[in-house]
Image 1 (tube, rainbow, N blue to C red):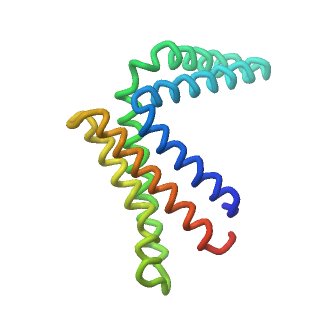
Image 2: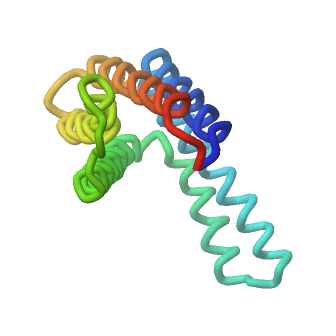
Length: 161
């Protein structure tokens, strides 16, 4: 990934974290509406390409997400938890498999910060039903902002691929 792409990813990740903290439950509903609109647009594109069955599935899925998006917030939190845990475990596996080279001290800590934060975010979201929603969204938002900071720091310290 290019340095500019890493910077954009880091900034968007931090914005995502801020929105989680500020909008909390509403942010997931807004996100579901956006995903629903994207599905509808992709379905219309498929319809014009004359691939009717996938177009119908995408359009119906998009409509369901827009209409029932508020009802699937719980499911979305579990899906986000699973995705974050899987990503964190895969990042950690990659770091352990490829080794850390000659990095020492703080750089070694930052090397494992990304997988660790992904795993912690996944665990927090996985057990969201045990504590208040406000606590979950503020904690997750803060951790996502930290994740964006780590991505941004890595963008400036790693050599260009």
